[in-house]
Amino acid sequence: MNNYPFMNPYGSVQSTAVPMQQPQVTIPQYTPVQQKKIPRVHGMEGANALPMAPDSEEIALDIDSTKPLQYIIVTDSAGYKTVTPGIFTPIEETKEKPLTLSDLDSINERISKLERMMNDESFTKPS
Image (cartoon, rainbow, N blue to C red; front, side, top):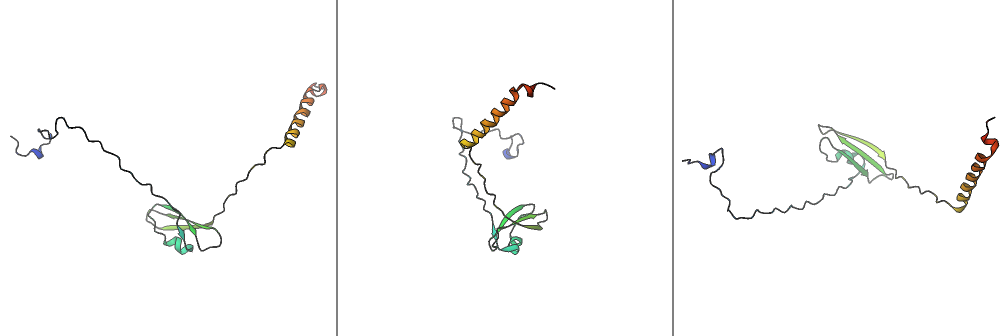
């Protein structure tokens, strides 16, 4: 007889489960989504003082400047930072002008002219 049931490499011989017990359902836990915000710094000194993990990248905005300055901060595997300043320039969305009735008339006129040229005998006959 085995006096050490917990040392058995083949598992326990006795079953600890109740024969008619229902399996318990595990409900997945809600994991809140962490919001990422762009850090705002005070000049190049603030960008250099921003705490960062090794092998990471970050964009920071300067709140002291009159121009929209940004800093791209990259750390290497040892945690040393390289800060590259730049100017943030928003791109304005250009909206195309909708076609007007005069534009459609012009297109129809050009198509008609091309059709007349193609139907003209002097145009289609080789010289």
